Image (tube, rainbow, N blue to C red; front, side, top):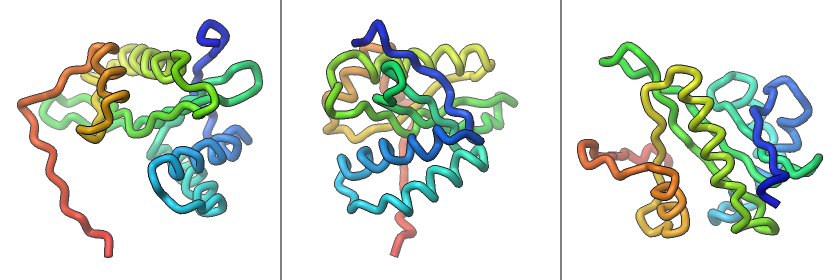
Length: 154
Protein backbone atom coordinates (compact mmCIF):
# COMPACT_ATOMS: atom_id res chain seq x y z
CA UNK A 1 0.00 0.00 0.00
CA UNK A 2 2.70 2.65 0.69
CA UNK A 3 3.31 3.42 -2.99
CA UNK A 4 -0.35 4.34 -3.44
CA UNK A 5 -0.64 6.46 -0.29
CA UNK A 6 -0.73 10.20 -0.90
CA UNK A 7 -0.16 12.69 1.91
CA UNK A 8 -1.37 16.26 1.68
CA UNK A 9 -2.54 19.17 3.83
CA UNK A 10 -6.18 19.16 4.90
CA UNK A 11 -8.01 22.33 3.86
CA UNK A 12 -9.38 23.75 7.14
CA UNK A 13 -12.51 25.02 5.34
CA UNK A 14 -13.39 21.69 3.74
CA UNK A 15 -15.58 18.75 4.68
CA UNK A 16 -12.34 16.78 5.03
CA UNK A 17 -11.98 18.22 8.55
CA UNK A 18 -15.14 16.41 9.69
CA UNK A 19 -13.87 13.21 8.05
CA UNK A 20 -10.55 13.67 9.82
CA UNK A 21 -12.33 13.93 13.17
CA UNK A 22 -13.53 10.32 12.97
CA UNK A 23 -9.94 9.11 12.53
CA UNK A 24 -8.85 11.50 15.30
CA UNK A 25 -11.44 9.83 17.53
CA UNK A 26 -9.79 6.44 16.88
CA UNK A 27 -6.46 8.04 17.83
CA UNK A 28 -7.89 9.30 21.14
CA UNK A 29 -9.38 5.90 21.94
CA UNK A 30 -6.09 4.20 21.04
CA UNK A 31 -4.42 6.28 23.75
CA UNK A 32 -7.01 5.41 26.39
CA UNK A 33 -9.48 8.29 26.12
CA UNK A 34 -13.21 7.65 26.39
CA UNK A 35 -15.17 7.98 23.16
CA UNK A 36 -16.53 11.48 22.59
CA UNK A 37 -17.24 11.81 18.85
CA UNK A 38 -19.18 15.09 19.02
CA UNK A 39 -16.58 16.75 21.24
CA UNK A 40 -13.78 15.44 19.00
CA UNK A 41 -15.49 16.83 15.87
CA UNK A 42 -15.90 20.21 17.56
CA UNK A 43 -12.31 20.30 18.84
CA UNK A 44 -10.73 19.23 15.53
CA UNK A 45 -12.89 21.78 13.70
CA UNK A 46 -11.88 24.53 16.11
CA UNK A 47 -8.17 23.70 15.88
CA UNK A 48 -8.23 23.52 12.09
CA UNK A 49 -10.41 26.61 11.68
CA UNK A 50 -8.27 28.75 13.97
CA UNK A 51 -5.03 27.58 12.38
CA UNK A 52 -3.74 26.57 15.79
CA UNK A 53 -3.11 23.11 14.35
CA UNK A 54 -2.52 22.24 10.73
CA UNK A 55 -3.54 18.76 9.67
CA UNK A 56 -2.10 16.50 7.01
CA UNK A 57 -4.00 13.48 5.77
CA UNK A 58 -2.72 10.21 4.33
CA UNK A 59 -5.04 8.82 1.68
CA UNK A 60 -5.24 5.47 -0.05
CA UNK A 61 -7.55 6.39 -2.91
CA UNK A 62 -10.49 8.20 -1.31
CA UNK A 63 -9.95 6.52 2.08
CA UNK A 64 -8.15 8.46 4.81
CA UNK A 65 -5.71 6.05 6.44
CA UNK A 66 -3.71 8.36 8.67
CA UNK A 67 -3.14 11.91 9.80
CA UNK A 68 -0.62 14.19 11.40
CA UNK A 69 -1.07 17.51 13.17
CA UNK A 70 1.56 20.20 13.36
CA UNK A 71 1.85 23.44 15.25
CA UNK A 72 4.10 26.28 14.15
CA UNK A 73 5.96 27.78 17.09
CA UNK A 74 7.77 31.12 17.16
CA UNK A 75 11.52 30.71 17.63
CA UNK A 76 12.13 34.01 19.40
CA UNK A 77 15.91 33.98 19.68
CA UNK A 78 16.35 32.98 16.04
CA UNK A 79 13.54 35.28 14.81
CA UNK A 80 11.95 32.44 12.91
CA UNK A 81 9.65 29.50 13.43
CA UNK A 82 9.94 25.83 14.11
CA UNK A 83 7.37 23.17 13.47
CA UNK A 84 6.26 20.78 16.15
CA UNK A 85 4.73 17.47 15.12
CA UNK A 86 1.94 17.15 17.69
CA UNK A 87 -0.01 14.06 16.65
CA UNK A 88 0.68 11.18 14.26
CA UNK A 89 -1.65 8.26 13.66
CA UNK A 90 -2.20 5.48 11.15
CA UNK A 91 -5.44 3.51 11.05
CA UNK A 92 -4.78 0.26 12.95
CA UNK A 93 -6.19 -1.72 10.00
CA UNK A 94 -3.27 -0.57 7.81
CA UNK A 95 -0.40 -0.29 10.28
CA UNK A 96 3.18 -1.30 9.46
CA UNK A 97 2.81 -0.29 5.82
CA UNK A 98 4.84 2.93 5.87
CA UNK A 99 1.96 5.38 6.31
CA UNK A 100 3.37 7.12 9.39
CA UNK A 101 6.80 7.35 7.73
CA UNK A 102 5.23 8.88 4.63
CA UNK A 103 3.42 11.46 6.78
CA UNK A 104 6.64 12.35 8.63
CA UNK A 105 8.51 12.72 5.32
CA UNK A 106 5.74 14.93 3.91
CA UNK A 107 5.79 17.17 6.97
CA UNK A 108 9.57 17.32 6.99
CA UNK A 109 9.58 18.55 3.39
CA UNK A 110 6.76 21.05 4.02
CA UNK A 111 8.57 22.44 7.08
CA UNK A 112 11.82 22.75 5.14
CA UNK A 113 10.05 24.38 2.17
CA UNK A 114 8.39 26.87 4.57
CA UNK A 115 11.76 27.87 6.02
CA UNK A 116 11.22 26.30 9.43
CA UNK A 117 14.35 26.21 11.54
CA UNK A 118 13.65 22.71 12.84
CA UNK A 119 11.00 20.04 13.18
CA UNK A 120 10.53 18.70 16.68
CA UNK A 121 8.24 16.26 18.44
CA UNK A 122 7.79 14.50 21.70
CA UNK A 123 6.60 11.04 22.59
CA UNK A 124 6.49 8.87 25.65
CA UNK A 125 9.84 7.25 26.46
CA UNK A 126 8.25 3.77 26.42
CA UNK A 127 6.70 4.16 22.95
CA UNK A 128 9.30 1.94 21.29
CA UNK A 129 7.61 1.79 17.88
CA UNK A 130 7.35 5.57 17.63
CA UNK A 131 10.92 6.10 18.85
CA UNK A 132 12.22 3.62 16.29
CA UNK A 133 10.30 5.32 13.48
CA UNK A 134 11.46 8.79 14.47
CA UNK A 135 15.09 7.70 14.75
CA UNK A 136 14.86 6.04 11.32
CA UNK A 137 13.53 9.37 9.99
CA UNK A 138 16.61 11.17 11.35
CA UNK A 139 15.28 12.59 14.63
CA UNK A 140 17.64 12.59 17.61
CA UNK A 141 17.04 13.14 21.30
CA UNK A 142 17.93 16.69 22.23
CA UNK A 143 20.01 16.45 25.38
CA UNK A 144 20.25 20.26 25.51
CA UNK A 145 16.58 20.67 26.42
CA UNK A 146 14.56 19.51 29.37
CA UNK A 147 10.82 19.09 29.03
CA UNK A 148 8.93 20.19 32.10
CA UNK A 149 5.21 20.21 32.64
CA UNK A 150 2.79 21.71 35.14
CA UNK A 151 -0.54 19.91 35.21
CA UNK A 152 -3.35 22.49 35.39
CA UNK A 153 -6.23 20.07 34.82
CA UNK A 154 -8.49 19.58 37.77
